[in-house]
Length: 272
Image (cartoon, rainbow, N blue to C red):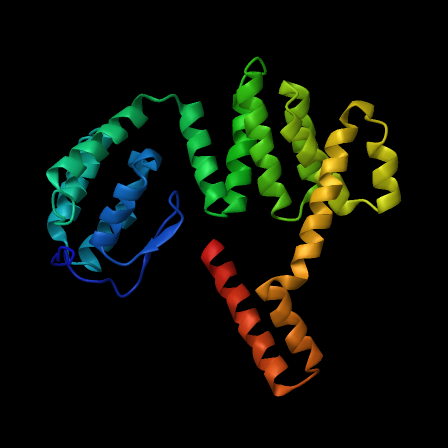
């Protein structure tokens, strides 16, 4: 059986949205959990006056709120903010707290460019594509062009974020820029895939055939697309859709459609 811990304060009636971590929290314990899970993303500006007021008013953790207020008033370094929260929670052991604070200290010594990429990559992993795109685009303006490999990685990840928003033309340009910087084949593969997803087939073939030295990569792309298309009918999602469509305009179909729309709406609310 796992350990049991008493809650710190109470659950808030309204959540607080931690913008840089892209999550809503309902208690001081959830704030502490987010700190422990994402120490490399923390900055002092997470601990806003609004968060401090919310902790006191909604969660009843006056001591944490007061400690954080003192940190703000004295412009203390980030580890002191983290301590102000973790010192009042029961589920973080002294050893775990020490490790978390060390990560926070190391993050403070990392230059702003690398920290910003860490944030952008986090948003990409969490499927917060708008956030990721803004961070990558800001990074591109800040990174020196001599940092070819680093900048190539930024452009590549920007392309992924854009493609997942179905912005294939912009994604194509991002992947192309990545390829021109460091010549990695993975960039060209994604560049070709982005073209493939928005151009008519004939125009795609005409454009891509002019890049003679990358024929093997485009052939691999076609093979991969055939494999994916062949596998799709056997997926649970495809079977569910076909089953509902075969039933026609029935009560079951409308219920299924309403359920899917509610899921998409919830995803949208979560993202914004």
